[in-house]
Amino acid sequence: QVLLQESGPGLVKPSETLSLMCTISGGSINSHYWTWVRQPPGRGLEWIGCINSGLTNYNPSLESRVTISVDTSKNQFSLKLSSATAADTAMYYCTRGFSGSTYAHWGQGVLVTVSS
Amino acid sequence: EIVLTQSPATLSLSPGERATLSCRASQSISNFLAWYQQKPGQAPRLLISDASNRATGIPARFSGSGSGTDFTLTISSLEPEDFAIYYCQQRRNWPITFGPGTKVDIK
Image (cartoon, rainbow over all chains, first blue to last red; front, side):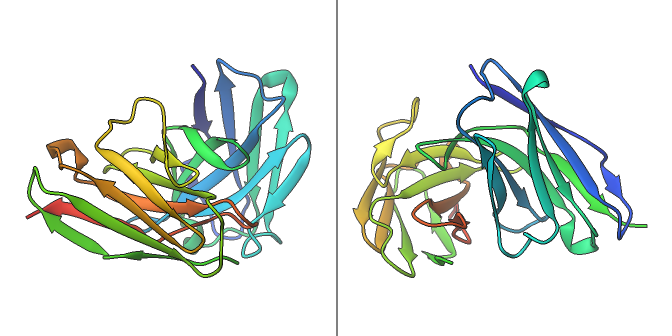
């Protein structure tokens, strides 16, 4: 059973970099599309981007500010979102894609608030 | 970017009734569509992949159909635990996109 767990600061100051980690247990990070999705309070789901075998794809709306990377030694992947604003306040989920980008395994999510 | 439109925005039904949710894509996505259920305070849960394949452990009352641009999620007889928000998601093209959701609430 694959389990994903997000971790990182719950509060980020405006203009700073939002940094989150997703730790995977019960499976290897060496395949699949490892993905970040976010959900602002009371709103819908927004795909941020993914990484697979070292190759990344990002949402064009965020691409200039996003970096997703993998640490295979720790079975983790990370999200960095620079120049954070209040609009980046959201629940952030990490998820694993199969058949490309169908998401059967999700972390519980971490709420990140951008505020001074 | 492929835009997904879901209708209705809210569906008010009673337990035991049939729910029919629609998802329309701005261009053909073949059958590369998934459906998710989300309850308050929980992560989304995969229900249907590739338009019509039920995910592991999903009850048979959930079914999906469609191809091209028009898709339907049907819940044949609503159980109390089915009142939630439902999202569709396409994987035909980057970026991956989700629909805005349909809320199924108790009438």
